[in-house]
Amino acid sequence: MHASKGGADFEMMISDVQTWVSAALTDETTCNDGFAGKGTAADGEMKTVVRGKIETIGQLTSNALALVNAYATLHH
Image (tube, rainbow, N blue to C red; front, side, top):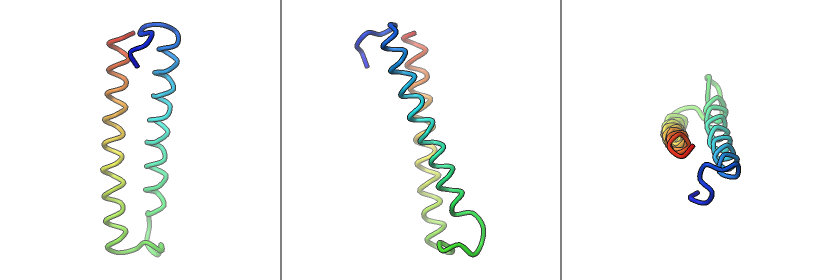
């Protein structure tokens, strides 16, 4: 990501990364929604474990997006 900092290519690259990470957050939410409610195939302990893993991934992805945004701000 060090190439062409501040240029149009850099801004496009940052925009792409922000889009990809934001999409990953949406996927996390959509995946988590699939475990909502009672009577799903994933009730019980497995549901609890999987939702916990999804939440962890969501937090990490959110942190990654914050880092990308901070990097973009510093090099804009």
